[in-house]
Amino acid sequence: MDYATFYRRSIDDREAFWAEQARLIDWERPWDQVCDNSNPPFTRWFVGGRTNLCHNAVDRHLAARAQQNALIFVSTETGTERIYSYAELHREVQTMAATLQSLGVKQGDRVLLYLPMIPEAAFAMLACTRIGALHSVVFGGFASVSLASRIDDAEPTVIVSADAGSRGGKVVPYKPLLDEAIRLAEHKPAKVLMIDRGLSPFERVAGRDEAYADWRERHRQAQVPCAWVDATHPSYTLYTSGTTGKPKGVQRDTGGYAVALASSMKHIFLGNPGETYFSTSDIGWVVGHSYIIYGPLIAGMATIMYEGLPIRPDAAIWWSLVEKYKVTSMFSAPTAVRVLKKQDPAALKKHDLSSLRALFLAGEPLDEPTAQWIAESLGKPIIDNYWQTETGWPILTICNGIEPAPSKFGSPGKAVYGYDVQLVDESTGQELTGANQKGVVVIKGPLPPGCMQTVWRDDARFVKTYWSSIPGQQVYSTFDWGIRDEDGYFFILGRTDDVINVAGHRLGTREIEESISSHPAVAEVAVVGVADQLKGQVAMAFAVLKDPSVAATPEAALKLEGAIMKLVDEQLGAVARPARVRFVGVLPKTRSGKLLRRAIQAVCEQRDPGDLTTIEDPTALQQIKDLVQG
Ligand code: ATP
Ligand code: MG
Image 1: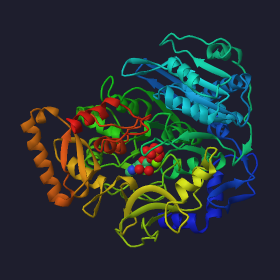
Image 2: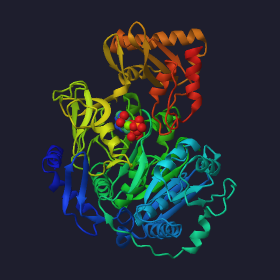
Image 3: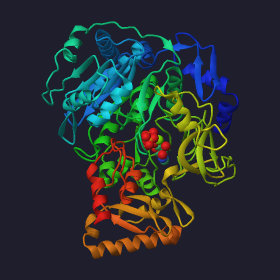
């Protein structure tokens, strides 16, 4: 079918369209109403229907593929490789579910998971949805204070955790951080279920901490049926990455989410039952929820769960897995590709990648040099896709599963079916319908299935944050800038708070970053707007060099700075030229690899950088501080 028709139907004939998609999953009871939007912006999908996420991800496949691979766990940290068939996964999930029930977890309760990338994390997520409990996965890298605030928000009955994670061969103990977090939190979980990997000895709190190894023995043969829940029953809560401020607790439903994932696996991610999917994300992020665990399993695929770095033991590790497990679809982030780009390109040529159909990338802007490099190195289609924790699945991409279409460098693609994506003028709220007009990317309600239901326990914040920022219109704001070309391809220009105003000219930081990163010496760059008495704001650039030695002396650095400024002058005009281009060893990013521009900006303006709970490497900000103040 041609994509334009498919898309139009999803908007103009919404109910019939989604009723069709809903047949991709199993229902215990069909819905009475496909879409209830009588109380916008709170949309309810498949009202009256009953289903279960875990059933659709696991049990449903037992008849046809019990002995096929379901979960392939690979840890280059501990040197472990373990494969679970669908039957084995079913067994493990039931054992975990019985354990959670023994510890008092009931339908509607929250279970907080503070875990590294281990199979038990998948078992626990699936066990929760199996019994109708909500999981709240907190990324394993967070420290006590961030964890404590999430414990207080979720108020979990049980926390599932482990002794330690491992990163780059270094053991990272989790238990002391968890104990401290529980001490700090007002809400105290009744039980902590500990998975002991034998990596780091820990103290047990009597009466509270339970050993999963013991419970696993006890419930080795437990039968725990899936609890059929309303389609609108929340399946989980998850925080946004915290790039722009305090993270928001996203609440997801069950039926709409299962349908959206099943549909996207087929139409976007080109996944077929029996094939292998490899997403390099972490279960702590939305990509991990949708496309390590639920999406591939709902599609009846094997999914690879990888604990480790992309470059250890060497830069070929991911590609060796593609070859070994005949990965057909792979999903990663531009930040990971940039890491690989700094390595020996021969690593990408060492393995047979013939099984791979495409590499999907999301999470941040995919700059053209990076896209070009990976496309050429792999010789495979690179499919950029743009979405948010809030939406749960792509908003913009190329739906090659419906109708193959070319990608355009720098563009994630067209509006995905179900999403009525528009561009609006930020100050007037007027829709911009012409080609190449720059506006805020918004979605006209109702949001399609799979998107957030509300902010966890804070309906008012949901309305205020997402649906009230555009004057005169109740539309969902993504808080990203974009343009759409004459062919309907969108280009994301950056976040609405990443625009700088130099002497009355509004410039997207992304445009300046693209220009700077086209300089051959530059590996990565962040541009922020900094308050300036004369011009209102000026652009400041912080760049990481491919080879830092080229700017080792102050003279060499100045010379390179001049050359980069000249390049920006030529490409964008003098108005976009940064006031300074400084060189740093590493840029401050969230743990999911997103640039923390707001923190850089705050440091440049000598302000408090605010909530830094999601920062990957705090020394990165210190480097900038030293430069700015030095
Ligand atoms: P917070 O909302 O807490 O500030 P966050 O927005 O970084 O954090 P996520 O939901 O993980 O949290 O990220 C979504 C954002 O990431 C998008 O709004 C967009 O700015 C950016 N993004 C994601 N994918 C792409 C892409 N393919 N191209 C450009 N930008 C992208
Ligand atoms: Mg966001």
